[in-house]
Image (tube, rainbow, N blue to C red):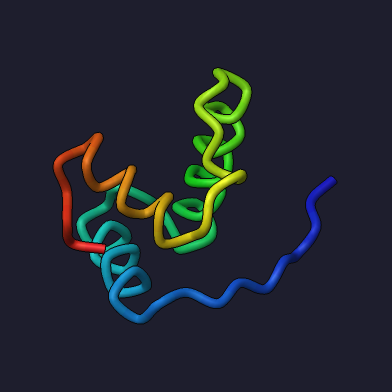
Length: 71
């Protein structure tokens, strides 16, 4: 069973998600966000905890690990 959840995103991140939808990487924003949530859970279970850190630090860590600074 699915449940709706409201999420506030920085506009730059929302735009990046919209671009992924536009090029067909995901069918919808919802699918992209579900993928991201699953990825976060997977990383947490692999003992690469992101949740224990502040949002900005986690974002910096993700950008560094993936060498990506668009967010």
